[in-house]
Image (cartoon, rainbow, N blue to C red; front, side, top):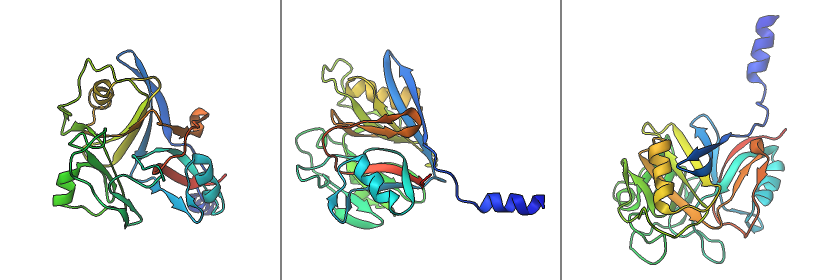
Length: 241
């Protein structure tokens, strides 16, 4: 009887849960992080039948029709006015937008920039290295600049910079089994944000997603940031309660 009960419980669908999200203070600033492991269903999202989702609410409504929900989510890369991705974007192994490796204006063009890849492991890879030796990615999004590259801060990030914004990004563990998504809870500069990934979280590779429009959906923290429509979104998918 106990064996049958244990088996039934092991086969039962998992209840919807928020990702492992929590607040951390570092060097006088507050950040929220959400950690995801390879065992979780992490995906990138952009469009549904009616076009770009644009918001966590629209994406959650779409998932609800399939009996699913977001465990957590955040914006996941830069986008044009029509919400189309800037640079590489891959969804379910389908390349929607091609990689861009030339320098250019804005944060995206502050080389080196990089690609966040969800495949057999999680990886953050400098864009030119990605193009030269392209890994298999079920999902991928390009953004920039890189924040941390093999344990070193991006060389153009200045400690004294007065460019302060709420910022978000992602870093990965060395073995690729863990991705850590972070958002600052107050404006910070690039250097401080990069140091948070390297010195506080201990992550050797980290990528900037965006600033100013940065938003987080973390139901476990009762948080659902609103704002302008978004392009790419990253999040975990869980069964709907």
